[in-house]
Length: 249
Image 1 (cartoon, helix red, strand yellow):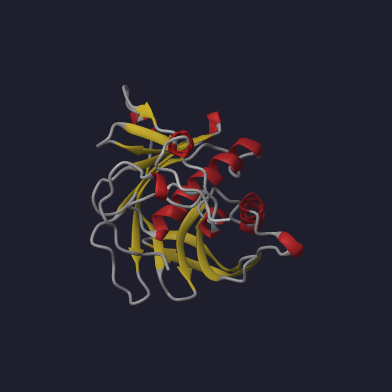
Image 2 (spheres, rainbow, N blue to C red):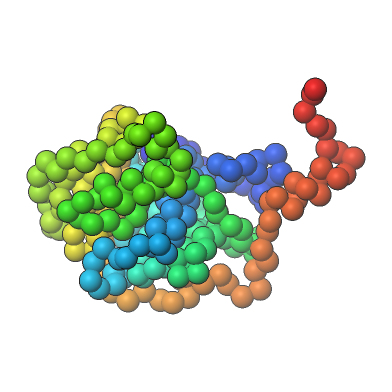
């Protein structure tokens, strides 16, 4: 569930530009993009869970349902309302969120371009800062943003104990999403953030090797000279050209 192969991708192709597609990324990384966007929305509209801003870096370690670990780890950097996610494997690109500006971007260094990242999915509800004693509140807010709370469905959380992960105390929860997906989720109360997620098929993503401390400001900035790419404008241009073929009537 959390891991799939990554294939190289060029600049975004119009046929690939949909609300839930970022070419070249596995499903997990697409969900991470969504999580970044939801984090921006939630952070901009609600108070912070903890009393102090949190700054840290960490690795994102993916294991598939068979327990096989991805060849390389992803990278996570958090500085209060700023977050950067570098997907695992080779450097196709990375995500930047500036919740103080209510913005989230996907950056492709090879093309020196960036674009808005605007997708919601199930993990949008998970990879956000949470109240360690009541994480469902934030996850439910994310579900509402993702539009999966119709018919009165809601997140359900049950705390089932405390565990240590890599020497750090975590609170372990059993969670059921509005779509009835089941997870085991570990929350690190020191940083008010998910430490580990295990899906029903036993695939996992872990926030590992956490290093607390100030993060370089340039990590959260789009490099100078990069151009903003607007997929919708490209689609509109193609629709006005001779190559556009409309849907059959």
